[in-house]
Image (cartoon, rainbow, N blue to C red; front, side, top):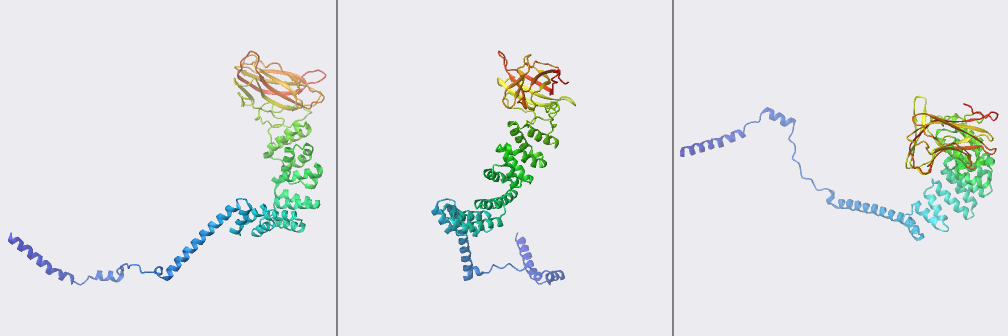
Length: 467
């Protein structure tokens, strides 16, 4: 044991002696070369105190805080001013113009609220010199004060910076009030051309001034399709039937597919007023331009009933078939084969006691005899179906003729027909298919399918119907 301890002490003393020899050994050439090429990375130094800790740094921080406070104050001030401007009371509006003196909205609101708000309105216009509406307000206020020259100058300035409808319409009305009618019509023409969708506004004044369709068309120089479209729509909505022929004649060459809704309304007005010739002119224009998928109508021919083959979807427009709302009744069109189409009416059993199922307004020369015929089949309907055709005078609603009850035709096609005469004063008839619950019966449930319908003139001499 003592020998082992002695041996360990001897090894330790040898290691202690060898260590200084190793530390004094010269560096290798590779180490020298690496030290020359890649110098040792300097030890990071602690950050030195900058100007932030000195007088200059304090000044910068102070200036930053002052700027932030000023910006926040400006935001708060503007928000408060805008809130005051939106309150409407005169004292708050006056306070708003002091809080945000460069805000044109505040000045405009104040000018409109004051009994004499010219100064405020002028200030608002100066703050937004390219806003036509601001100069319009100034013009109206100056004219109210009797300053005609100033009002005209402001109106002209409005047109200069914003040649839109409002500016031109203000100038046109100013000229009208001054008795300068030629200038009124010149500026009103420019106004509707600048914004065609405001034509109705101008047309209302035109009719108040003249009530003369021909003079209005001439003085307003209505030529552009966009303006004519809006003017025609105005006449339709106001039911000014006497002005429709000339307006339609001007507009008709420019009509297009997206004008169909307006054309449909035009036809309704004309049919309600028994203006058959113009209604036929509108209908035939729509057909010839393929805006509708139906044929033109000629009173000299037998093709007075339209869509009798049901090949085109029922539209309810003009002389086409119409489908009125009927609770518990469902209607659809189907192709039966390559050349045959049909219109199907489904009675659910929940229909009302009386339901109008299908109708069409037909132009018919007066004092004539006509034969109406149709082909149909039924599915699950009793022998007396409750269905019947009726012909009425369109204007008065007077019944001119009725078919017999439509009988069931299960699994085969049946044909029925009946005649009627048009009185001397009748130019339009309405042909209707209706359901009426028979006495002592339940509401039927089943289907009625019609595949063709037609109307032909009957020869007065023989009374024979054309095939």
